[in-house]
Image 1 (cartoon, rainbow, N blue to C red):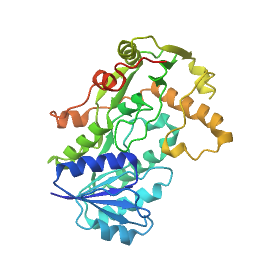
Image 2 (image 1 turned 90 degrees about the vertical axis):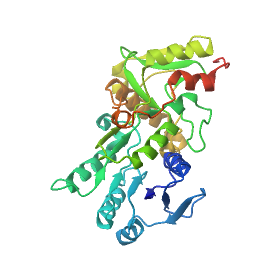
Image 3 (image 1 turned 30 degrees about the horizontal axis):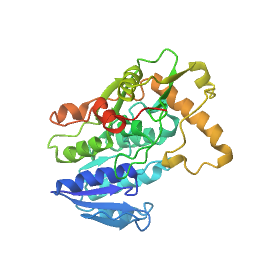
Image 4 (image 1 turned 180 degrees about the horizontal axis):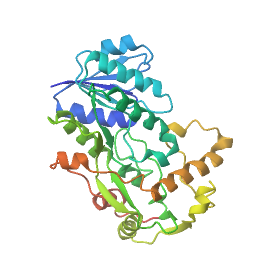
Length: 317
C-alpha cells in the first residue's frame, strides 16, 4: 500500500484512473481539486488546493509515493510547482499530464506538454531526483462509440470516423496510416499496475491497446453495421491551409473547447480538425508499447470486440 496523490482530480481521465486505483483496494488516494468537488468517490480523500502555494503542495505531498498529474492546459507553471513540491517532499514517482499521444510537435494545443518534458529533463540532468513516466495511450477507443457514453466519467467525443452516421473523413494517401486506440478503462488498469511495478519507470510510457489503420477501422465498421461508410477525401494541402472544405466536421465536444463562443465555432472547428487530421498523417497518434512489454499480462479490449459491443445490431444512418 502506498500513498498516491492525484493532481487535477476534476479531470475526466483522472477520475477514470482514480476508479481503477480504488478498485485495487490497496492504496491511500488523495485527489486535489481547486474548489470543493462535485464528485465524491468512496475511498478517496479530497483536498482543495492552491496550486500556486508551493508550501501547501509540499505539505500535502509529504509521505506520497506517487503523484499523477491531470493538470493540463497552457498554464505550465502549475505543473512545475507540483514537480518542485514532489522533489521537496521526497516523492518517488511522478507522471505529468500526458495521457494522449507521443509526438506533440504536430499537435499545437499540446505545446505545454513539451515544456514539462523539458523541465523534467532539466531537474534530473545532474542526478535523478524524481522518477517519472509519460503515460501515452494514443487516442481513446471509447470515442469511436460516440455519442454513446461508454464509461462513468469520459465524455463522448466525435471523431473523423463517425459510426452513428456511417461516414468518415479520410486524408488523401493516408488510408493505411496506423493509429493507436486504447480504451480509457484499460489505461486506468495499466496505471494501477504501473504504480505497483517494482522496477524503474520508463521515461516514455506507451500503452498500446490497438494498432489499427483507418482502412481497418472502416472495414470493421462496415462489417459490424452491415452497410458501407460514406467517405470524404481531403487533400493534405486543404488541411495545411486550415480549410478542410468538407460537408461536415466533428463537433467541439472536448472539455477544453466547450467555452468557444458560438460565432467562433466554425473557424475554430476548421483550425482544430485540420491540425488534428494533419497530425495523424505524421504518426503523432501512434504510440509505443513500453508498458505492454513491462507488464505482459495486461489485457486490452480489442477494437473489433469494443465496436461490436457498442454498434452491433445498429445500422448506421
